[in-house]
Image 1 (cartoon, one colour):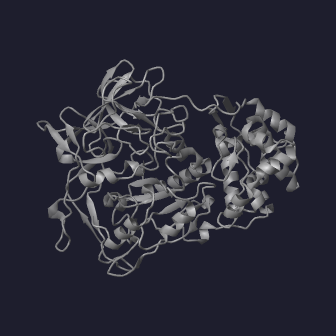
Image 2 (cartoon, helix red, strand yellow):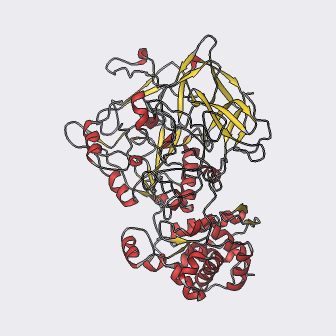
Image 3 (cartoon, rainbow, N blue to C red):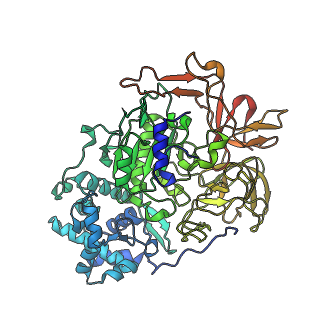
Length: 639
């Protein structure tokens, strides 16, 4: 698909991080121990703090879980300078001044709860940042202070239902919609209960406790009302308080236009995918870019600090975000403020939770399956031609916690099977995240290892040996060289939620079919990284020695009416060999091409969907998804 020359020129003229661009432009790893935390947290720290400051323990635990999932992030701050399991914020004066004019915050003081906690507890700010027990005490003290400021009773024996206003205050939101959204999350967590092992190895459990909070307390907060979605133009859950910030659909000279195409989906092509991006830039700059008609577009932008969300393009229209026109015409793109090489610092719990709410809402509204074959990263989008594979993007990267994210979406990644892993079975990758600290290089400085943190993948090797080279990806390494541990090199990675067909098993090692070859990873029965899941597989039809794979499912030439040029169906540089098998991601792929190359005003009368009769299937192939022609393969149940 040809893109507008003016837009390509604009992209080439600006030095922007690769993961933000929506149009494609062209040492052996081993597990490392997590970085030691400043101090370990015991579950008793919460009960002690709750009793000392008069906060119900369930409230304290649920607030902490909503802020950090009880982790201390090894003392590292979040994007708004939040520290520890209670996310006490402590920005400096210059940082507050910078944010107060841009970020939706109540006051500059609301970004300095670390200072407030210090004043209330008598503990110094350094201790509150670095000592987990002190941090929990500080959070409890701040919650109690908010409760008192609302004229409400304090006491560990008070009903959790009476703490809604204090919890909403703790959100540090800029309006009542955002504050109430956080409080609703906290009470939802409380109702479900939670249990996990923290990053310091401590086991914490919170029994489920369903209460009916007094939501009218939010009216007492000295905050503006905020955006009311029912009265705005956004397609968004009411609780998110999304804002409508439209991307321009306008001409800008020489017959060119931007920065998306009008359509009438699903009538002009059903929506199959939600694509998860990260911005590789700060949210304000990203919002400026999406309002530029000479740039590209996406449907939503989400801020890291609080998950605040803007919508730019209607779901019915086609945004230019994936670098693959076929995927564009069948997807919705969400940009998340963050930097893929930095990971957890930017991918905050607020971001994950609000994004999951949005994805769940969009999936239900547009009949998108809630699984990892349809809720995909930009790094799963295939190249359209052999020449474009190398330039495809790799965001949101190895530090996006897919397992936690899909839990929040309400579609947990499969990890329950007790069936044996054997040749012919489908396995779903689920290595854990927090303890899965893989060696990754070049995040900040070339030639240096990245800061150890949880990753979402396992490496695949050419043999069942920790010292064997990583598997090859001819699309990323056309010279035939081996895969690398570079942060952007996903060619040898099997990510959480992805599926593969087992080819062999040798002791603790499992070999799967991957990019037309074998890829080995360690998955001992005592601590497996992959779990058997029933499903369908594709295999080459009898007599075929190899089957081509494609990056798009375009119609056959005879389907194109006069006046619409045939879009050549070109195989990628990979093939499926005889005897190999790959899991089916979707059998119901629409074979089509949405012709939209001219500015068409309202409505798009000359935009045409060309529908073909040639059938394709979406499959799990390597790190990215791919398509195969139904005429080339047989579909069979896995063993």
